[in-house]
Length: 411
Image (tube, rainbow, N blue to C red; front, side, top):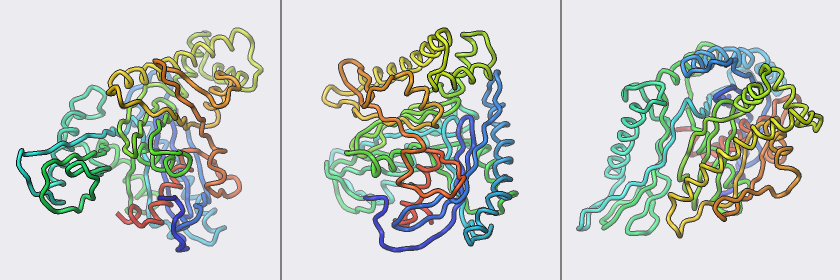
């Protein structure tokens, strides 16, 4: 379905919060059913993570930064609303998008048969899905990467059947009847309740809105890119954050896998600094010169080595996925990289001027497209001075689609 498919013209205001591994962004978005959303106000604030990073420290810094961002919304954001004929009470809903490490997302395939025909119904399907979700929660609660280690303190923020096959035929979850075989692709996202409740408390205290929905970025990115730029339903998304990145594999319309990667913008800066024995601030300055083509030979060589190691890391992920796929099931060949303009500028210099950009893994060629703030200029409207984050823009398009379809914003 097209993002802008309705002829109905209606406006509403939502506050979108994007909470990543190293920054928090917020936007006041004017939703426009069937047309283009407009970002009236936006703000971005970087987490002060420092050198000795831990999840506990990151969580504390996230909480402090969220307070700063919400106070900016309460002051400057409300002023922007007034200039556009709205007021603070116009904010009816807050849509929070969270990325790794605050969320774990996973796609599971449920296969069910009894050897004889059985009756399938929404209740029976829901029971199967809930059993699978419980398994995911138990597994995630015992992993070393979890912020918590008890299943009861994890909360499901997304649980959806992306595809249902009954006797091999695609069906709707509402179907009732007898079948011999059931196969369901289920996407699940879970987060620690402590993190979600911290976010809820800050929003309630500052903005005074309790109508809050949580979303995981993989679903948002895959949905928007499928409708906006992809020629088919199979592609890979690499979302590059500050401390963490995510690889999302979309195959025939199904978000097949989401893979967290422990590299990002800050990782690049720290590694350049460590290699040259300089501070992160100095390393960041050298990276700016590198992007402008004004770096000296030594720093350019070091930065190329650091960026090369990150590309090798991503290639190893593709390599592993290729080895795990059946012989007749190739990885999608189109790769979309979403990140801020600074990171994309480093990637552009590193990869040279070749367009389209390509990488080859085990004989399979992947075409790489870099998606930054300018990619979304023709899909979103922006008020003067609004921060043009590619992440916020992607979310604005997604929420506008849900608003147009009336499927997601009222859940």
